[in-house]
Amino acid sequence: MKQLETPRLILRGFVMEDLDDFYSYCSDPDVGIHGGREAHQDREQSAEELRKRISEDKTWAICKKESGKNIGMVWLEPDFRRKRSFNRCRVLGYLLAKPEWGQGLMTEAVQEVLRYAFEELSLELVSTYRFSYNQRSGRVMEKMGFVWEGTLRDATERFDGALLDVMCYSISRKEYEEWQKKNSN
Image (cartoon, rainbow, N blue to C red; front, side, top):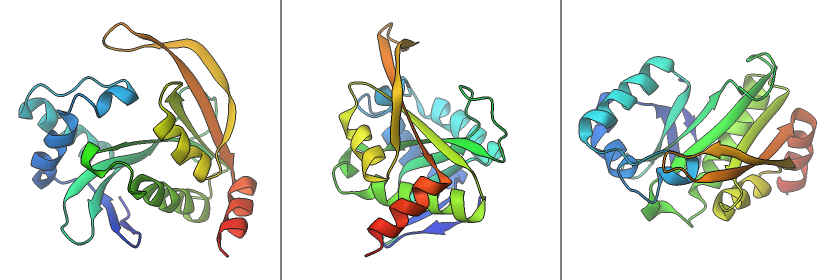
């Protein structure tokens, strides 16, 4: 993973030394559920997922610059809902430790990942999805210029049996460039 940097964050590839921080937020029942993920039951479950994220090389660890603490993750991976080349279109996903919510950190991380996606990877489109009830995630998407495309009703059956609507968003290269011009002042 190419290391990325923002004023408050370092986005870097995961390492096994992240396990304690990773387990801390992945085991919090209030964190993963909003992305359809069940809380990790033990450190071994977290270690297994962490090893997978390291080997796949698609996920950045979100780390605070001052402390180096891993507080979440952001990823770009193939969008299984779209029939587009991985070299042209990817889906963005993210997860943040609950104590860090409401500080603009995820918006900061997503802004840098979008810059990388459009300016360095030359992607044409980045999509993202959220459950309809997850307004917090929706605010990140809207702040970053994503356009709401529609809602897939009853699209996901979560691990707990809840049937949830999924809201679809995307941002094209042109929309990103317009967003950049508007927000660079």
